Image (cartoon, rainbow, N blue to C red; front, side, top):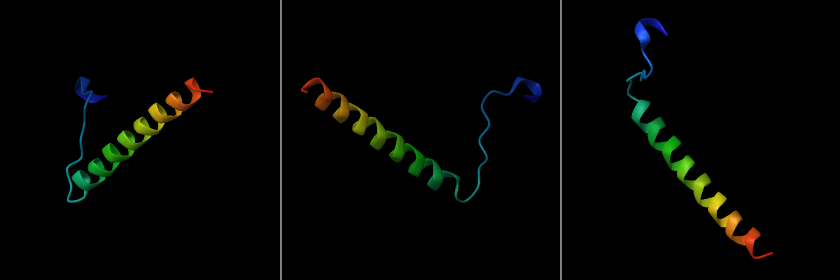
Length: 43
């Protein structure tokens, strides 16, 4: 990456909306993983 940039965020009108959706999806996936693990431990 140019000038050793490791984090780069494009700020636009929809960037924060998209970010919110991505975070919500990651949290939902994490919850599903925990539930699956819980059920698999009981089988």
